[in-house]
Length: 519
Image 1 (cartoon, rainbow, N blue to C red):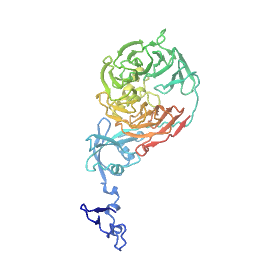
Image 2: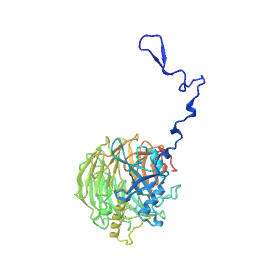
Image 3: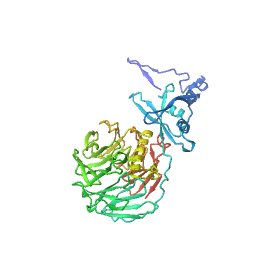
Image 4: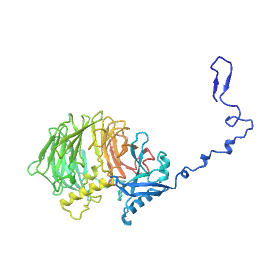
């Protein structure tokens, strides 16, 4: 109990309060403690009873198109109730119902900016409102609906087979867009193609004279490119199992080793199949190639040091990340003209990821490796790829977003088609970032770092979500399952780990352990 002493030199003190009464915890004088008899009225009230019975909402898709007019929905509606309502408004047949996730558009009182907050799948509107007391129940609440994958990938639990053949370290593996073939390249200077169903080798490509450092499938699946330490690029025909270019054994593309390659998305191609490939190198140059004629169309210079990563976006823009701490944006339509330079990192930029990457990389193929079109011609493939991309924009995210990872231990989120400034600087890792990957639906970003952790971020806002802990060595790479529910990581500790990413975990936990460890 505190005391107050006189400011003038006196010999007395006074207690800050009476010696008797209900506020004195040591009261032994027989006064009744009325606080035990009459509790505050708020202590007995269920907070949910203070909410109205219904809420006025407006459904919108990612493009901002409103679904019907505003309507009253019960305050206790769950995510399943809201999904059923959306299907009803869209007149979706009962046998084709789609699962959805919902985001509430909320005005931040501090920044006066609108942010999107995901409603937990296990919660209701009432629980969401109680968790976010700043949301008014007297105004219209805008709910963004986003479809989820209707298929589910079976989680990995054990090794099903071993594919022997390489005689040195395997540096890269990559699935074909339809998922039927697997290609690998490594230190033994060969490129090997494997049948996914039989687990048997189909073809061993020989032509490189040094380590194969990077490989890349064209979105149409008719071309495969491999780049090596000598700066040579070889284009392969995976259907006929041979090298393309006739008597020419590859292209001497760069004076130093190839660091990264990217194909033009199929829906942007002016030909029935993908023919344009961009290569990046230690020599700080980007080169645009026509793989049919094996000729260089454009050389793009501007970086001061080695280019570490290159991506070809869905808007025909090429993004390159360099050791000179910058990211450059090039317009492929205008012969590689430099559009803008993105500056913000304090150290070399190692990796890039696009939210449109999965839909452009898989071209016209769905999760079953099939066209949506009945006609299986090349023209049908291009039109199917365009329809697939347009559907992605309409239902998931119409804005192309780019995330960069650097040795400065940070990530930056950009809207590179329009702005030079980052939307958000994402911090949390304690060591350099090795690899980034957007989930196929664009909702999450996974980052792998030398600090032995994988971190998950909101793919639209850059908000930190959780950390995946369990590796005892640096994490080199991460990869998502096509349904965006599982994540696999590869580490220096000689293990791969499987992580389950579900909506119940995100928002409730900040650290999760691996579902499986694959030694």
